[in-house]
Every structure is written in C-alpha cells, then in structure tokens.
Image 1 (tube, rainbow, N blue to C red):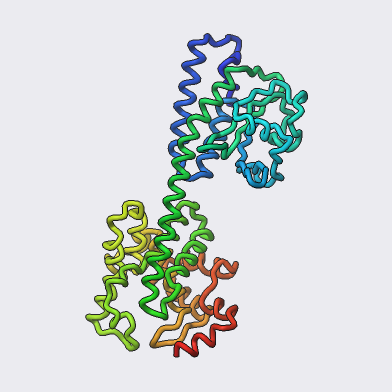
Image 2: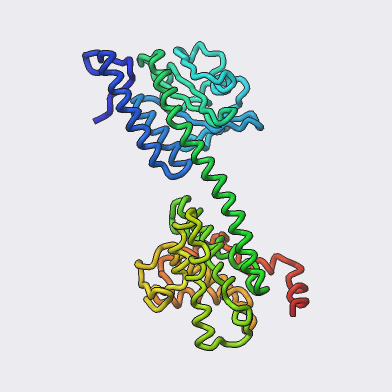
Length: 392
C-alpha cells in the first residue's frame, strides 16, 4: 500500500489531526529518522538515509541534496541525480538560501525569481512548492537540502520547523563523519610511513606494502565489496608485513633457502604485525586480515591453519594480492616472474592456496588495468634498467 503523505499540518484521510496528535506523530518520525541516520556507516549511506527518511516524512515529495563547492560557486547534486549538471550558486534558489543561512519556504515556485526550473528540483513531476534548508558545517554550509512538493499539497511554517529539526539531527552526524575522515587520513599517512620503513629494510621489497594495498583494493572492488570495507582493506595491505620489523635482517636478506628454524622465525611475522599494532584500537578491525594473510584455502597455511571461508575475507584477499606482487617482483634468489606466469600460478592454486573466486577477481582487476605490477611499472620507467644495473 502506498504511504499517505505525512506532514504535520496535513489532513490524513477524512479527519484532521489534533495539534497534540500531530506533534506526537512528528516526534515519532524524528526518532525513527535519527535511528536510521545514526546507523549509517559512511557519508554516502548517511546522506542516502537522510534523503530516504525525508521522503518518508513527506510522502510524494522529491528530495534533492547537494554538496556545496564554495570555491567553484557550484552545488553538486548527490546520489540519484548525480549525473545532472552542477547547479550555480549565483542566481539559484539553493544559492539564495545558502547565502541567507535560513531554512526557506517557497509556496509557489512559479513566482520565485531565483528558482532554476528543470535544474534544481528532481525530475519526474511538476513541483509547486519547496522547503530549502542549508546544512551548516562549522562556519559555512557544506550541503543544502530541498524538499519539493507537488500541486495540491498543503505546506506551511510547521513544515519548515520539521525540516529544521531533521537537519539539526543530521548536522552532528556529518561532523562526526568528518572527524572520522580526518582520523582516517592521519592513519593512512602513518601507515604509508610504516610501510616505507618496513620496505626500506630490503631493497627488493620497496613499494611492496603500497602495491599489495592497491591490488587488494582493486580485487575488492571487482568482488563487489562496500567502499568502507575496501578502505579498511587498504590499511591492512599497507600494514600486513609490519611484523618484519621484528625479524633479523640476516634472515630477511638471506640470498639462499631458509633453514627450518629460520623459516619458523619468518612465519612469526604475521602474528608480530598484530602484536605491534594491537594497542591501536582504530585498527582492531583489520587485525584478522593482517594475521591471516598467510592462511591457505586448503587449511595448510599459518598461523592458525584455518580453512576455506573460516579464513577472514580480508585475509583471503590479501593472500592473492601479496602472492601476485611477490611473484612479479625480483628476489635475491630469483628473477621476477612475468605477469602471465604469475596469473597462471594463481589459477593453478585455486582451491589450494587461494580462494578460487578471489583469484578470478584479481585476474579481472588485472585485465581491466586496475592493477599495475612491477613488470608494468618498470616497462613504463625508462630509468628502471639503469637503477637495476646500479643495484647489482
């Protein structure tokens, strides 16, 4: 059954709501609205939940949320309407509202000199009225939202207050998201520095953490994983070998085969990685991927001998990304394999060392040029052979 419009001053069915009942219903809507917003895990999800919730409160309305680019003087429509042209701040209804800083009711869009028809409102219906509200962020709006209503819809000051209350619920969540983004950027910078420190101990591993991170992200995207998971996977890829800082250099750079005792020391690096990072609560959700990136799909890996889908998904992705970079990079005891040979080796180990589906995902990412191996990077670098000669 189609939902009836739910505005605080609107007649529902044949009987108008009393002011008390309308207020109770609006409060219930806002509680549900706040619950939805609070469970959103990313900016995209947060703004999507915001739009959907407004659509529930004003049934039949068109919702438009735009990001504000103050420097360019443009408003960027988000989500469903993102393919549309940006809206100029100068001479638009949204721009006028942003400059005023106030939530504004436009009872008749046809009489609004600022309204750009066919550009500001969502397509589909002929909209008669609108409520437009800036979404503050620190000193100036970061977004603006418009609720567009069709002809015959009763709208008034109570609707303006309701949208203001909805925006007031969104605002602190946006600030929390921005704080998390700043924190994430800081951790990314730290993680890149740590990965560079790990790589610096062995010239053959320079860039290994960066490449594994990139390969893992590409594999995750092809596999259809959520952006938030891929962001965390990027950190896991950068930090997966940090435990090598606790391995003696004589073992790390040994040109020949390792003894059983030396191999046991090397195998400890994934566990050491987690031990080095365990006091960083922000990274706790990537520990399982880091610890398990040497597990084998057939159960023959380490450190826990996990099998199949008991191995965390992040660890299974890192395993194929790590192996592909290792095979296509030179080592003291062997030359780099070609990309084609490395891909064949991954395919030969499907169901053995690697998750078969993730091997296919990495291979497809490679075909779509989302992955650049050492071979590709060196082929594009005219000084690579000279650097290799000088290292030798």
